Image (cartoon, rainbow, N blue to C red; front, side):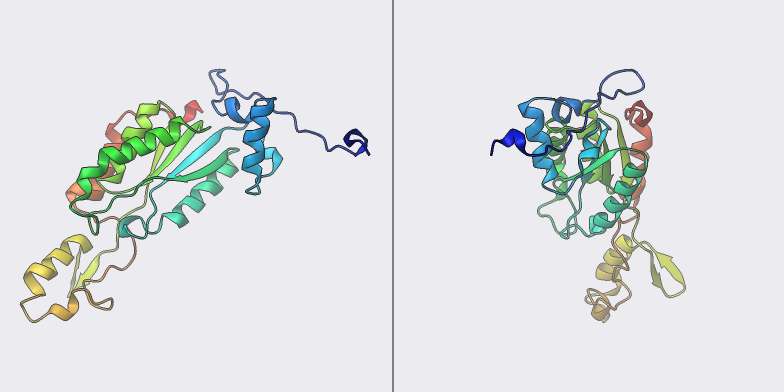
Length: 239
């Protein structure tokens, strides 16, 4: 029986949507093509369960995720990314999450500072080479925040930074202390060598972290968040 005799499902019409300036979305060069290349791009994406209506020309928004279990500051970003996806869907976009190298001073040797430019290159090429019209950057500390912002700025696409938030403070006696500082204080001043070693590294001890998040020192979450206000990111409303 010839193929033409089988009932054919209707092919959804791909609309060429534009931003508020009348410029077609960048992702239409991938998903909006009515030829062999466009068919291939859409077909491979559909094997993840994405329905055909998501390829109707709506803006594709990338979620740049620095989640890693090796980086305690970002260990909760899977949950954050899920919330961001819901917001993008509700706003009429098509969210696509992708990973980039994650940095954290707590485990990475000799220091995470050496790799900020490498992460920036990872972010830039991941955005530039894929069908994205805008990007949400999930970061938090003084390593991932500038890395992701530099990479996104090099691509000249609308970008938003979503901070993972800070780690909970630690209660020591009657006062609250930033966890990052309390750990060093415990190791150097109150812990090892001073009869209080059990409190350091013990999951139930007073110096143990209470949840994932960025330490709140001047050079960490505070400065990292303020940099987001100072750098001229593209206007997200330009989408």
